[in-house]
Length: 530
Image (cartoon, rainbow, N blue to C red; front, side):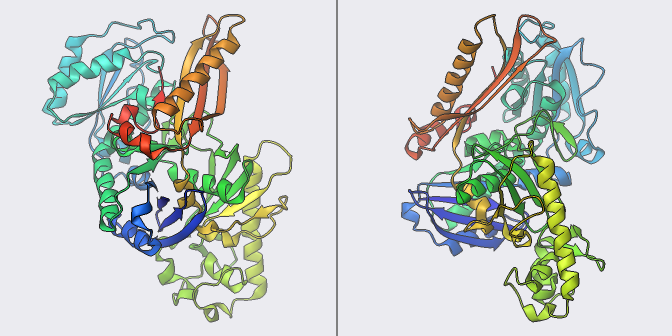
């Protein structure tokens, strides 16, 4: 048996799945500020046979929330290898002031870096790095982010620079290296690395809180965190790479929607308490955002689903003229909504008044005019349909799967989309998505592709991605390639092509026990960025 848990901003959801992937039980509990008590309450409500649980998969938005709020972030020393180039735009140049102030804005530009084919851009200068280390030590910074030009093509400079800095700094200093986190594209990859370094201390706290919650209900099975792309990472990798969890919430919901509906290709509308997230599933996995993504207004290029969010949820405020959102009562829904004895008209009140949901006390909304309720719900349906239409890439018929506790606001048919499905257990699709999370292996590299050798190069990349998934703990025979991206780089010579291959497989708990102790670079979700 497996347990899936999703720690959201309003609720913590849990689902118990059997070895045959049947959903055996579900539970929902309010999210708490300490995380532990909310997860513990959800697990106690789930009441699993703890001796039969083989693994626990958890998704959380805690790290993203910390970045958005600009709180609980550690100060970071950002070391960039790229001089004499790259000096025009120092690290964190375009960051919002709140986030920049939270991490300290400490930047160090040094020589080093590579060309796309691995040739040195400029020689690494050990003495220069030692001078940077002296200043880092003087400022008592204990988290360092190292980025280098084209490190996904050649990681040697980042590793060597980290060795030099580590020898000069206090024992226990954390290092985040950009080639382990991002893709080609210096500034966005550097930003992701700095964010990751700022979250390292918080990651330790959150991982310990989750472990404590499981211990309180006597669950001794290993637990893992879900990543942005719908694959798993072990707790060691989570401590080292917390930034990889940023989009795990919508990813889990979309994966859960595919599993519960049986559809691999569809649109997903996930309606929570505050927002509705709209995304597209292809082959059972969320379509990934092309190029850069943004987190709290900061450009990054880590893997993230292509999601369109709008301010419509179960807790959204409804104005006197029938407009819904974007403001929401959030986790105070059970205190402020009319059906719960409050004084605020919310989208949940509309759903209860229209007979779409049976929560709270319906007698509290009998005075809502039928015409007003219908008009407000029609506006919600129109905005959701418009969002789905913006996300699809063709005019072909596209089924829509509605999930999340607030999806009662989604009608049985949307304008332009007649096939709307709301599967069983739709309200905990995020927890189900966490429970079915698989192990991934990825290659993202700039290759030289000689004339007539394209097929051979692609085959080699596929084999490497599959091998990475197996090494990370995937069950032999279950690994498959789910995505191949091939982008010729016309501005580079010699047939240079960026190739990205992603492979996934089912988690094998018996094998992952060994993988987890080898350290984060070889744990669940291991990737190749050579």
